[in-house]
Length: 171
Image (cartoon, rainbow, N blue to C red; front, side):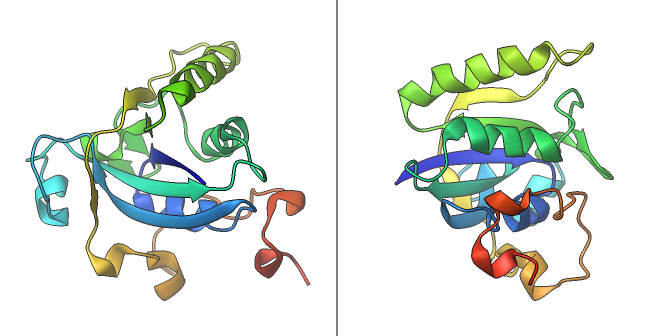
């Protein structure tokens, strides 16, 4: 099992999207890449901590590759938009890939370099070694399952059928 942390705007949609994909074992939303320990949602939202809303993803690399995970991330974000995704604006909504395994850094950079060829504007997705990840408050965990009509900038129906876990496939 491997781990990666992704930031793609509001963490509710990122988590809801990735938990539907085959090979993703577990997701958890929280805060990373900030200046303080144990931030609260309120502190993050007022820009006091410089944390980003993120989704920690644990995955089975024999089922899904890091490259495929990155392809999915780039399907749900505008990688050229700085501190804004959908209707969410602020530094906590910046995009990023935060790795634990040094070997993943090269994979991520190569992927982004290839993606850059598709865009006129510069890709502004952060690529950094992961710092502390702080779990978000419980009411944020699996938010869109608990609140199916909640706001989400992510199109949860963009996942190709072959990538969906069985329980999310059309019957």
